[in-house]
Amino acid sequence: MFEQLFSALPLVFQFNNFIAVVVGVIAGILVGALPGLSATMAISVLVPFTFGMDPLVALGMMAGIYNGAMYGGAIPAVLLRIPGTPAAVATTLDGYPLAQAGKGGYGLQVALVSSAIGSLASALSLMLLAPPLASLTLMFGPPEVFWIAIFGLTSIVFLVGGNVTKGLLSACFGVLLSLVGADSITGNDRFTWENLHLLDGINVVVVLVGLYAMPPAISLLEEVLPEATKASMRLHTESIWKAIPNMLGYWKTWVRGSIYGILVGILPGAGGSMAGFLSYNAARSDSADPDSFGKGNPEGIAASEVANNADTAAAMIPALTLGIPGTSVAAVMLGGMMIHGLQPGPMLFREHPDVVYGFMWQFLASGILLFFLGGSLATNAFAQVLRLPRQLLGPIIMALMVVGVFMIHESMFDVYLMLGFGLIGYAMDRLKFPMAPVVLGLILGEFAEGNLRLALRMSRNDWSILWSRPICQIIIVFTVFVIVWPMIKKMLAKRKLRGGALAAEMEK
Image (tube, rainbow, N blue to C red; front, side, top):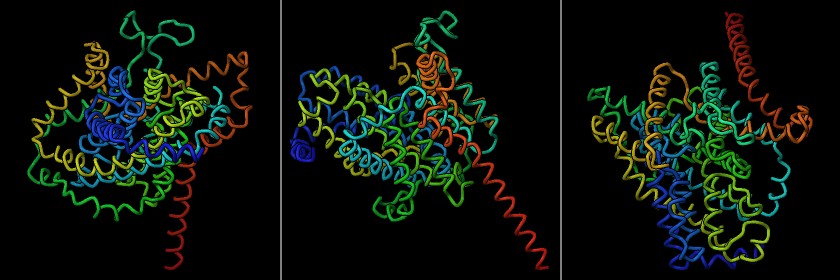
């Protein structure tokens, strides 16, 4: 394996293949930075144009777009609280408060370095773990995948802090949205009200743009900032080489987040959103100052971005070895491979080792290029967005929202739906309801329901299949731990406080 791996390395440095990765990374950053657009959409548009290309040229451009878009989504997430991609939702939690404090440039630099590290870790996992981990993914059947989804939903509900009831209601709203459309098993319509546009369900990008883009865009038009506040929005961006030493303390977050991203990427269907939230939750729980998360802690950005970028190449592990795409982007990339006569599966490594291992090197190269191209182009250019007048920025964002959502299906119904969710998001923002659980509920709701029903069909409606399998039991323990741990921490904090007060009284 390693002989074939290193023999494919020179292919990456061929002019056409290398330029394809460079173009892909730049295009991906731009796509990710535009709210409403996504890597899936960009690669879907690209695939028909790759018919006459060499396979490695086409695949290199796809790998570059994938990694570039994952970082690009952090740019509006930090500067405008609008996640450019679904995976950047967790980045908004600390990115936007950091930008409001006048440190948006540093937030983007943290996102860039974390994204590059996650991309490199993901590419290495694809190179080293694809064959052995193929057998591991076969151990996860519908019951295990159901509990993985429940674990993800539970984590985000208890992650939001503050009012758990509001977090739970938001998550339930997201799960309810995931039920809209034709039933995947019976084909019956659910909550469509005989509207043909809803048969395929509600697109996550429509919800994402509506909930996250509309409230801040309206706020930009509502508020007239005093000069003191405008001054605080100056980014004070310094050289990234000077900023990197300040980030070295995040190394534990980078390592942990990379592991989360890789593991989530290997599980089909989970995606970068779940990886980002799990990593963020772990960083918050491990922090000496968990209350600072959600208020502009750069470590929250690092946790989210390293995990959602570590998901990229890892999602290709089950795709290349088993033909099971880990994400929607991986599914589109599989389609691109099949156009070029590359059939995913174990035989792919034997019949086309130069292409498959060259593709792995291209993922690694795109992670390296992401750091240099992002540092020299995206961070310095896009970090100036906050300097635009707010009265101008609001209409620009709304125009991008409408264009981006319309391009999904070229349907005005999606635009109207987005505007409706924008009003809901505006109300939730004013009532202090967290919006992150809505998005994760939409993403994981159908995922959980489908696997629950498959598990019950496997067991002929015997519910014990959900807790009788060893891997299910392990995931259940982790889920219960996520619920109980905040309560335990509060009890320990109260005891420590009482103990300190008692010691003070005894000293008196």
